[in-house]
Image (cartoon, rainbow, N blue to C red):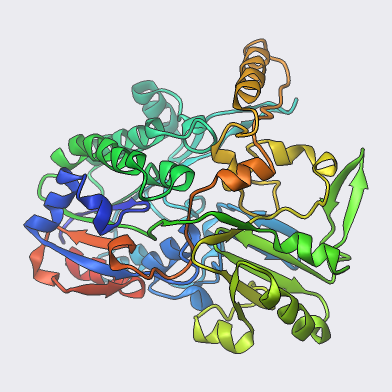
Length: 455
């Protein structure tokens, strides 16, 4: 069987490929195809489709997070592979070739997957509340092997105001080491760099082109050692320009549908008693409605909210392959230049302390404002960050309170989640083997394509 290297280059589009000659050469040697994504066009949903061949209605990953009804909690960015329903790519390959070996370097839902080598971001959560950068690996000894060669996984460049090329560089180098040291049959690598400046500044900003060129340079050494492997590079979504944050939870609260509880002067979303609330995820939002009798009224309210483009009911979810028990009773799609915040408080003085932190696991929705030092006072935010780092070095507890609220939301210039309107800003697939050339592939066809390439 042919060995494969599959690169998930987040945010890659035909427009950005113009600045990426090394990556573009894959398609010139083989072929380049348009890639039809799924709704929602977000990381966890699309990656799960690539690996199972199923839409979100089949694999159950209806977003980067959802309301876990059995727990009464909103969780984003879970890591256990058992959450993904359906047969995985490598399981299908092993039916034909028992012993087929797989390395997963930072694709999502990596933990607990039945692969041979796993690397995924995983901070150390100390008992005193400190959080330190690190990663999880399986086998366990791979952790020290990679850390000795590459240093500690650069978590603070993987997400947050400091997000940049260092994390993608580390992932590319870890992938190269695993390929050369262990020679897996299938190597999966996730490269997030294009996510950052495109969300910060928008896809038309010169910094987007610079980010593409920067990532291309980091990919060159990895592509150099690919050898006779078939290389596939693909993307989950393209990022489009936005300028309007939509506060759906604030509307639901104003209408008496969303409730909060208060501790130490801070307000927390109360999903147990709320009649309706939204889990915001870029340009989509799952709205969970406790009483089915309230659904028509909630749908009408949401449809009237400026920035909401479409409200999907049961029929709409089925038409878009989102009919799964994890989905909200309603799913909102933003207008093309808008995106959804998770904000539910009506007074910033009442916001929970985690709202001003990079805190992807406690916020009941996605928050791209975490990519910025508070735009309302960036100098003060950076000084607070410096003081927090000093406390960290002294072994003291610290809060990295640097994220802006409304000012941060207004600063966001790129988002995703909707199906793309312009092919130049849509996902793309590159393959070094011309034998499977087509003008277009659907995301649900990627699994079968990779199986054919491996034979």
